[in-house]
Image (cartoon, rainbow over the protein chains, first blue to last red):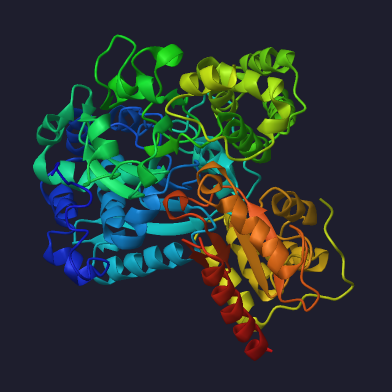
Length: 452
Length: 175
């Protein structure tokens, strides 16, 4: 069993309630932060912990906090990004639904560090029942004196508001989220200025993912150094991985960073291996936006090193032969799955979710969707494959926000690693329209069979 | 997408007006426009699950906004329905991870079972079928959202039939 930080108490009956959460040491970090520490000390501990943003970008949290402008004297805000919508990702939902006080405690301790008196939890609108769970937890924390005016007689005051979105992937991008929180369309802002200087209502703001904020109480209770000892290298601590696809045990798992990918996929403690004894064909390791990897490059890097579940190991080889840990949305594809169809599906998603602000993304995602759909339906040409590669290249890096890149990468990596399968769709148009591809052990073996 | 005008005024109860005011007061002074998304959710629930032009105009009036500020937001977010919907809006996820675990089957099954296409409502006004993009339930596919809750692991016709029957019973008694 690996170290559990976030889910240590998840199995305790009634942990959703304030009383049980408190019995298991809940809210100790707030007490410590208010009575024994200065805000700068809290920031320092988080810096020492090496905690990195768990939403996908992996930016060091302590550094993000230290950028917040405290000199201007303007109100500062902490905004929790609970707009979990990256395909493959369903971890924040689990935390908020089953141990809501951990997020509330994290919000309070983090707000003390940022010297903020008003915080928001921007939760995706579809999580209607979870919004209620959080509101109950906030009310309980308030009754117990951890929120509101003059907390524990220290003179510090804090209010938390749960704010629902209304169905827009783009609002997971921090500046689009802030626009949405201001009651507008979720259109990303041009950076700089960064939210730490000009964020919500033009005031200094920090936006952190649910899982990031939920890790703060443990760091404050046990110290940043203790957290930094867990994990491997610059991938410190634990990470929630939401595992799905064609595996035996889909679900949310807390892993110590550095766990070998093979163990994660095959051990009973985690994914439990592939469903129905099928072969693994490909993996999307960190949410739909990260490059897809064929099984051989997933288990081992191009240099032959065993791949680990860590920021560095998964990205080893760059985009040519590596991928990213991203949000921890782990999708496993078995031998029957069609890469072209999956790429079309993801591209339809990005087209649907593009906010329409930048032409490369607005037009490019729709164009790619059309080309991929015609390939999938057996109307494609060989030249379409190069066309797709060309379109994605023109989106990547040419948009205000990373949605454009996120739409481009899955297409680029699918063509890079599974080009034969795209070609096969053109050359065997009739067979391609049948849904089950009955692929054998690997794509290569399959092509050698059909080629004859 | 153009919103639909019904020529039927939307008159929220005092209770709803109070709730709207309370939501607006959660935000800092002068920033009550922030309440627009939550307020639209409240109004949509009150207006049989969709936002008519009249309902949006009422929101503008209550929140002291220009109508265009409400329209531009309502048309941006996929959860706001700009056309009438059935008593039960079935929102089936068809994004990648669900699609490889019978998500597409679920859409097809519901189409056949309810004899409607995606985007349509059954003639008795009970069900509207909608496909949606990722609802963060990837490990529990196939799934759909109906009203406040998620319904997951709907991998057999029996499970789906039972669920539809339950909704239908609820729908009849609601009336």
